[in-house]
Image (tube, rainbow, N blue to C red; front, side, top):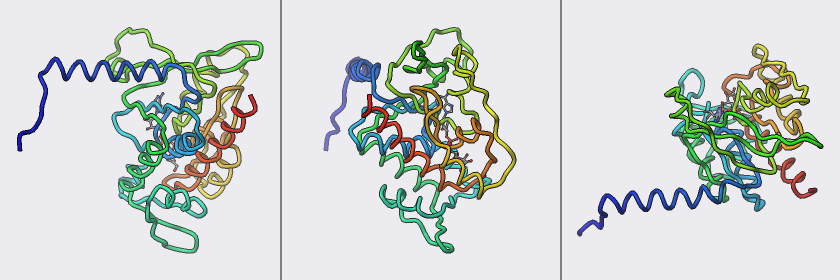
Length: 261
Ligand code: 48F
């Protein structure tokens, strides 16, 4: 068998042409999700399944966020029902370890949540950091994000970002709630004081994170541990049921709000 290959300039042409074509399309989208951890990938799946145009930006060159580290690098992830339904929907086989409690391999969960989002039609773009938001007044609202190559940020170069306009932005950046933090600092009139995460109280935090998942201000939503940072909730450590349920809940809320517009 002779492997078909290409001259170097042709490789370049295909990469640049196809990527640019896609960037033209991505520059205006329905929903931007920031962060490809458990909550962001779950939100992406449920929004895309409902026909919403979703782009998910992830700072790193991999997805999964905190899933891969399991608990202190042990490669297992624990979660409780009914979050196991979401894992089964994407093809995971969680193992029961107690009443309503399951365990799953970290690698399996990462791979299948990502496939779930991609198969549903969400676009995941890695190596991109969201460093600011776009806002408009009367009424005050968030209308997109400013993005930069993570490599540019790491190199400390002075390079202006580019922009993606969207009807909604979901902060799924985890413990630092990076998007909401920057908006609270830089959007006049937002009057949003992040309360900051508290020490560990897993069971309480799991309930409250799901309960408080939702809209922060017009056009800006929180899911996953970003909710804990905004609301002053305890940390929960390596238990992930609420991350999945929060992702699904924010998708439902955003989709409802978009439909109402
Ligand atoms: O931290 P992360 O997994 O967030 P999550 O979905 O889940 C939290 C759990 O992993 C765990 C926990 C509860 O079980 O305590 O920690 O709330 O995923 C966040 C992702 O967002 C990316 C980051 O690299 C990670 O993959 N991220 C963070 N800030 C940015 C970003 C940013 N400004 N731009 C792009 N990506």
